[in-house]
Length: 69
Image (cartoon, rainbow, N blue to C red; front, side, top):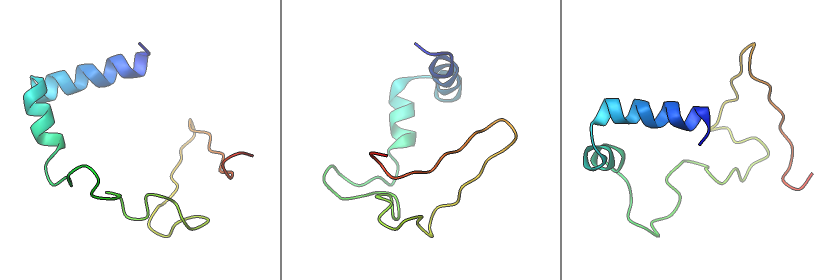
């Protein structure tokens, strides 16, 4: 397990206490299976979707390129 995953799981455990509470919190407002994309323009159909914004800082490197390049 990666360090990030351990930290993330620890944070979730502290915040929600148990799996049932986590599932209830994270499923609020979700569509049923097969209900389509939950994110607006989540399929990135445009070259750079207007609904998304790229953010970065001094520690984060970013590279954007088409899939398969």
